[in-house]
Length: 248
Image 1 (cartoon, helix red, strand yellow):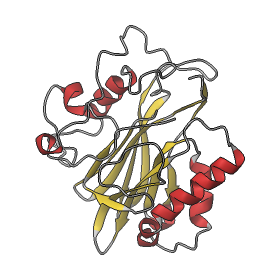
Image 2 (cartoon, one colour):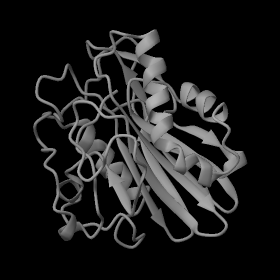
Image 3 (cartoon, helix red, strand yellow):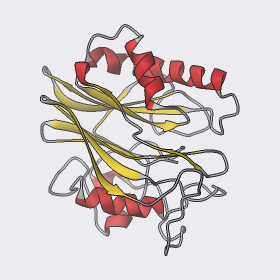
Image 4 (cartoon, helix red, strand yellow):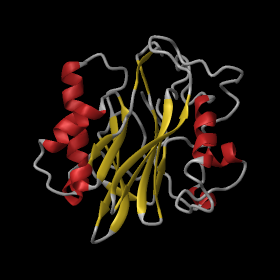
């Protein structure tokens, strides 16, 4: 699993993601960014699935895109291509599916967030495989309101502070059992905020944990079932949320 939140606030698009990758046994294999950055297109992509941001970046730049608009139009095909590459090189990957979340700033339309899914076992609300969808907000952790103890609109900086509330949500996600039978916790390493605006792409790490490579993530002092990952009611939160499953 990974933590992945995408939203727009004001004149920028944002992605919040954690920095721990792990194998099928739940052991951390790397602590590094899960965001592919495209400064030439004022865009960034993070993901749910078993891949690497370098693979996303290489394949995106090899696809003939010349702008952020090209990137979002081709986001579904990019998900297919990256997954195909991954399955050919790592056929034993635990979860043969991939979701891409792109934050883009285009001068004509401003900031936006897009998601596209490769198809597979996960059920996605209103998201057809290979079809990019513009979303007002995306979160793969379904208990944001529960973690914060109040209703939150991810699009409104007064309702959801990306750093303060992002830290609270990350801690809750780390302590939760998202999928029954998962080996250990999956959210870890660090939490990163990537911001895409007219000024370019900026990244900031705002939370770190003391996780170690080749060790399982152990959120000390917590009970993993303390926060459920129930899918929220988009009408209550004010921010449409698609997706419910997450992978390393």
